Image (cartoon, rainbow, N blue to C red; front, side, top):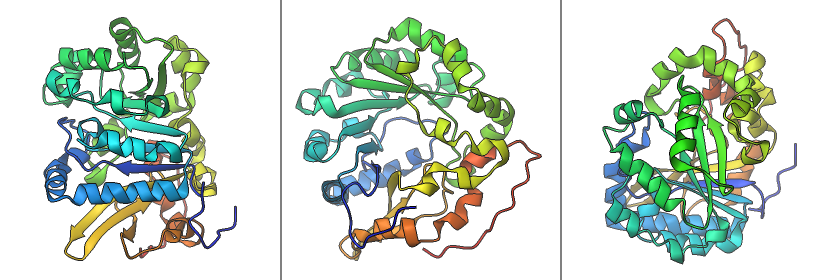
Amino acid sequence: MAVWRNSARRGAFKSIRIQILYPCNAKCSWCATRLKNPLFRELYQSGVSDAIHDYYIKVIERMQPEKVFISGGEPLLYPRIAHFLNAIQDHTQQINLFTSYQFSESLRQRIPFTQMPMEKIVLCHTMISFEPRAWADMTANFPFELYVNNIKAITRQPLRKRFKFIINHKSLEEEIALFQEQIKPDQSFEFGLKVINDQGGGINETAIQQTRRFTNKRVIDLDEILIGGHWGSKSYKVGSVEQMAPLLEDGDVTLCPYRSEPLELRFAFYRSNHKGQVLKYRYCPYFPSDFGYRFHIGRDNLDKLERNFYKGSFHNHCHKCRFLKYLPEDTAIELESDVLIS
């Protein structure tokens, strides 16, 4: 493991992930973040969102990550999204911008693509489902036709697009085939695969339990899925699922790539009051949702973010890794379970 230095170094983390605190129109049943929409609206109207976004810009300028991942809320609908993207474009090699594609045609037409640094952007989307009936059930009946039309219209923009299909879906092969038929992806499209991640409050725990057995097999046989979907290896981008697959052999968390080096710094909003704003941060997409270090904007030094990766005891929480929910039921895991006080 590398040695921590007492400074917020450039390139300290390969990627930084942030939230745009602006409401999302989507009502996806598996997404815990949608429950925060009233809070995001309040934060935006009070100016807190903009203040936090400006701080994210400073962090990215200082740390110069290879990649930035921007989720939400709904980043594309945030009124200052072009300003934000232009402010960070010279401080990272790639901007991965997430969208739900769930908004009206009039809202879509107001998205300021021509003002964005298109050459840096990869527009990302996780396929909730591309089977119309399942889509209706999982999105509170957002019109599937409008969703498809939004994808067709926006993907005509001169930028890269990445779509991730959910391995847990038994209809995965049918979804892939229907997507290819309706969207007709070209060489500017990238494809990936994703497992359902258990979010706050165990919102997806039942779905994981019901699909664990065949999902486990699919994770181990990713190449077979790609061949079946008629995807060339060049179109598939290695994601966290492939990186984490070795853990499903016997639950050995020491194999986790996010433990061995600082691959990702993930920010989320924690709280705001008269004393200031507090963020929560982690180092892994599958870390237990009830854990996170706290960062007080204006009080804490940026070097704290890197220091806690090397000197913090977050490894003691890896036995609660959400990816391990896909282990076979008879797999025994014996790990230390020290409690971390963040």
